[in-house]
Image 1: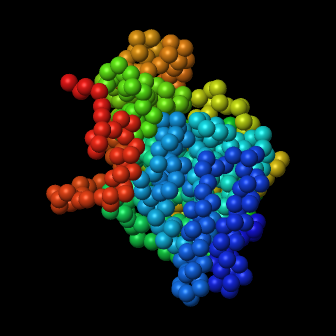
Image 2 (image 1 turned 45 degrees about the vertical axis):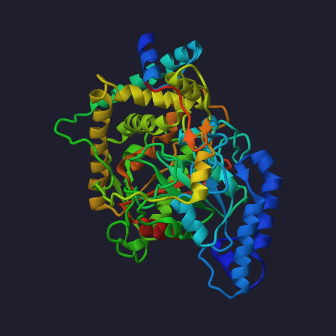
Image 3 (image 1 turned 90 degrees about the horizontal axis):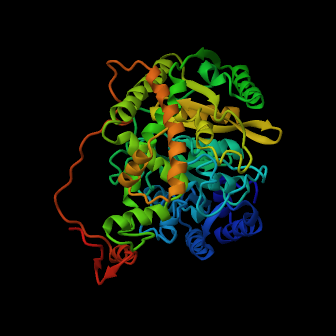
Length: 467
Length: 95
């Protein structure tokens, strides 16, 4: 059970070593055993999953060709609509909301034979860095139960880390796939913006959101990415991408850039040592290591928190108690809006709505939103310049490994600073992977591998060599 | 520190009913976060274009034809109206 990969499941099914139903039941046993402690899942549905598994088993009996993810038990972050399940986005305002359709990414996974086990916990509306802002439960890091799994895709990474599923879907706006992947010791890809359809993803920030794959190893992560990517007519910002970068021969043909700004003060020693070992390993395998500079790095965090909150304030306006979700009768129409949102939306999401509303309001728009968008252009240019000289950029994912539950919850700004190394990549729309690189006193530490737009193929090649 | 009335104004724009404790808490949190944002004033953005989108945006058109949805989907959506009257969604007076 523990060492099952997508390929092993598919091969085992084809050889009739086990059935899809047996695999599915096996994983539900693990969930029943472990999840009361971990709390990765918000909703599971054994009957629905068994139905899917039986269909796969019938396909095998008929000798039909199996999908690439046939029989693979999959968990989906509860911000991604999955028909047959609720979709709460971790919020009370959507506590009983039933998904009316499948997100494109989910539809694609199903068409390849994946078995959806359930929906995983997240920070409310994908706003946070620890999954502690969920309105429903605290998810614990399986590597150390007193610590957070990271966020906002903490439920998905915890489920993987605990062996409750084989693959998972998450979403990344400012680091929400990469950081929990790093904290839980799993592989997580933030794809290039636009490479995976956002249709069916409850929006946080429209110019930053991406759905991405999570898995226990690089190969599985890549298989899921290949299955979910692609232009979708339901998402006008989705694209098939530019030219695929030339296939890399070996690490000896590769130049890796190390930005000095990511290795200064604030980076914990344990993390620094592990990342430097990973860089040395790449060098031993033949890669050329070059120090680079991304001069506007320190401005990425305030830039991100202005832009994302502005976009979020617009995206969350639809949760108003009118068409669906929690609704308070109130006095007049304005009361319905204010009471429903006041009660149904949690503190952190409210804080971000307030920040975004302020920064977009008359008299402040130029100083905040417009200024941040100009700084964003400069941040993107830093990466463009660097990629003229190097093929990939290596950095830590986070300045520190998983922190204790409750440690940062009372200080919003302290929590925001967790994202310092992931947000620049988000602002630039680039692809980046978090690869487990070692343990710091038992706590996983991830290496961030950043590439040019649409060069996920290159990232996976490098990651496989270093895995 | 942000003015209390400004916080009330933003809450109203954001359609959020906040208790007076929440308003005060919000005032403190927003003030410190907005202070942190002023760091961006250190950056010279003279002549720099604001970032538009990570992808090339162009308007995509379709035929001006009504498309139907499956009955099940329509029923799922209508079934989740907080206040429903037959096939109608009930709301408070708008005018």
